[in-house]
Image 1 (cartoon, helix red, strand yellow):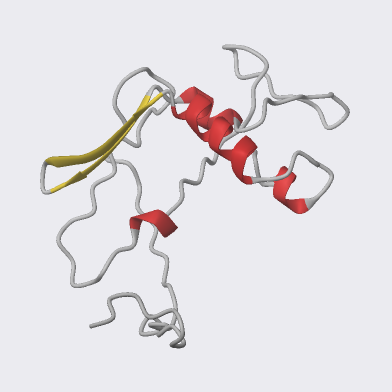
Image 2: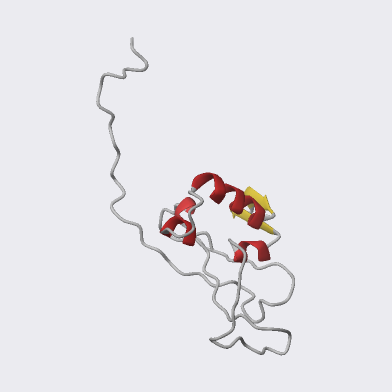
Length: 131
């Protein structure tokens, strides 16, 4: 009995035809500028989820200081690579209250992953995706 037959053509499962993305808002959407937990709940729904294809979208404005003075178009602004992930201390993925995965310092972890995964030529599209 052959367990690993490398002469046969591999079978590719293509049952998933497309991905449909859904938007979810944090529960505490009143003031996200305060320290504390930001929780996004996805209630029981009749769908199959693929968490590795999910992503976070940060929407906001960049201000100069606490008085909400915004930058002008002529101002030069430099953000570190993967800047938004450096704003978070811990990410947790839980399923029915059971912790599946936890990531401390996601900015550092995802920056290291990006440096290993993508070329260091930031003039190309893969480098620009690191922010």
